[in-house]
Image 1 (cartoon, rainbow over the protein chains, first blue to last red):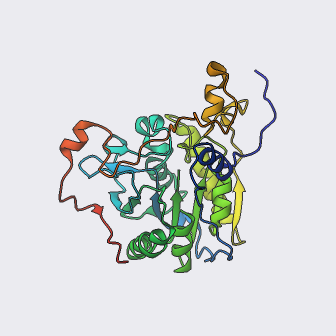
Image 2 (spheres, rainbow over the protein chains, first blue to last red):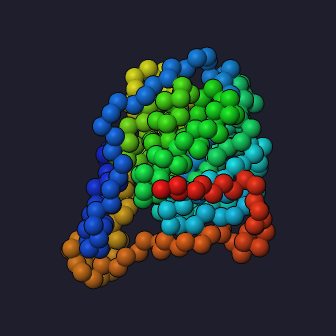
Image 3 (cartoon, rainbow over the protein chains, first blue to last red):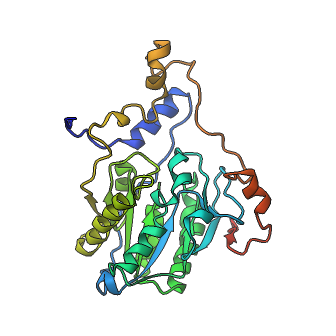
Length: 166
Length: 147
């Protein structure tokens, strides 16, 4: 089978605008930052780093309360030794078929454990954190969720954090 | 997620964001990001394909070590399939339906809202999960909105 030329990335902001417009809804307002990103240089090689993981694909653990679909700003604490069979996925904004079959596609915990085994990273933090994403209120994310998650990874004393949105 | 990356980075902890939505990530301007041109729901690789997931993670981690400019976004060298046809119908219900109904106008008032309803109660993967949920769940953190 021959390969066709690569098409450009999907412009999800434009497609959301089109979709809302076609439905007669006011435009969704994506967060847009005008200021330069803060930057903290890596202090040591990754194979010596303790790595934190935060993911927004609506992952929860069997036995936990699931997320809801209306501006949910709660988060879940997931032990980084948790295996795939105990993980669940719920979300309103993407097709969950593959995430439910293999949570690693949006929550690469198993993959990161392999990276520890192979010596690519030093270790994982004791816990990973998951939330829902698709939160309409930028204020709630800035004032409540972001500081809460930053507090957690600071307390875990991780050296770097990997963030996995959907 | 970009907002959370910025908050963590501002406290001195380096972050890397993975992304399959380039425009959204670029707008949020996180400190460092990698872009994987896969359909949403596969930010860390393909289902059941541990080799692909590890290859994506290896490329991600090596990008982490190399980035030195705030706001860098590196495109990862992976492609979903031999062609990009999957991109044509994403979030375009009118195109999904065009072949059967012949409807092509993007401004038709008859457009059906096919997005998932925003339920305000927990949405479990299964009924068994709902039954097993611990109402005092210690790992479920519900944050107060103080405003």
